[in-house]
Structure formats: structure tokens, C-alpha cells
Length: 136
Image (cartoon, rainbow, N blue to C red; front, top):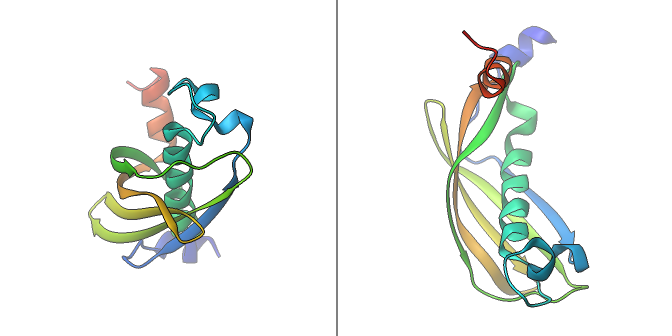
């Protein structure tokens, strides 16, 4: 089984969706991105990123992970507390270690946000070592 995992590769077309029902802690007021009681842009971005992570989770080569490197996101519509939003991500391009996703967040038929997120495939152990300053 470990051999199968090492042979896995990421290919365009992978998708995932994640949902969030907006609560007080998700609002612009709560996350410090504004003073209105609607879904805050940082939470929209976090949800979209969660969808990109989910899209590749089953197919990552052993010992690797992805980290965010670039975001283009248009937050187009407000979402009040109690409503449910759905983030969908689709891997559209694999260029070496760079992964490009199209993301869309909707509430019913309304597009709440859309854009592109780039993630980079990294060796998990080395990345953590470098981040913590323990890598030579």
C-alpha cells in the first residue's frame, strides 16, 4: 500500500467542496475585517482554501503537503448569519510543484466569491523544519 501512495500524482480535474453555516464567529466583526454582521472575507478565503486542500488530500504523494502561495479572490456578495455557503475548488493546472485551483463560493444560486488559489507541493518534514528554524 505504501508503494501505491508513493506512485500517486496530482492531475488537473481533482475537485472538492466544503460547506459552512455562517455563525457570529464568522462575521467581519468577529474576524476584524469590518464592522458588519455578515460573513467576513478572511473566512470566505479560509473556506476556499479548505476546499483546495480537500481536493488534493487523497492523492498527495507520501510525505508531502501543499501550502498556499498566491490568492486572487473577488468577494462579491454578503452572506448573513445562519445561511450556508459552499466552496468548490477544481485543480486546473499542475506545473511541477505548483498547483492552480479555480474556486467558487456560493449561497444557493448566488456567487458569494470566486477566484484562483495557487498552492505549492512541499516535503512536509523539510517545510516544518525550515519554518521552525531547525533546518541547516
